[in-house]
Length: 135
Image 1 (cartoon, rainbow, N blue to C red):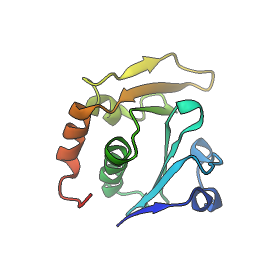
Image 2: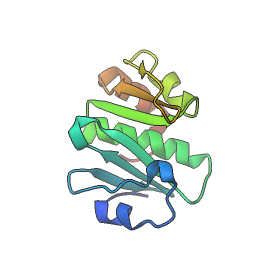
Image 3: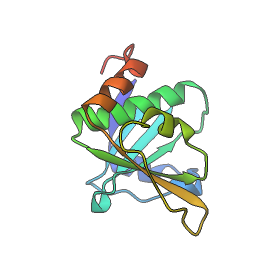
Image 4: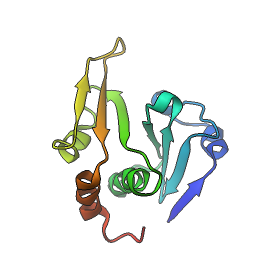
């Protein structure tokens, strides 16, 4: 199930981890894909990716990839930013190794920031992972 939802629904989730407990606004992009809430905080064009689910399963990885594909293909997002605990999202680095995975310095909270370009080649590679979904 792929559903574009309001930022208000994201803000109303009470049990989000501190890492993603960010108030979104009307400019931000939010989807619920299966059990995964996915958001793109567009403030200052940083396109910070936030994901949350209270049900952790392997399908969430595919849902996350689908969300990034939707951002690039249908929402006009050219770059995304991932901020996470050091080493947590190696998957992104593997997916985007050839597409501008810029590692920026570790911040004071020991979190790494990575910026990825969603060009046509990256979107084609992402599509290979999610081609069984109807997008």
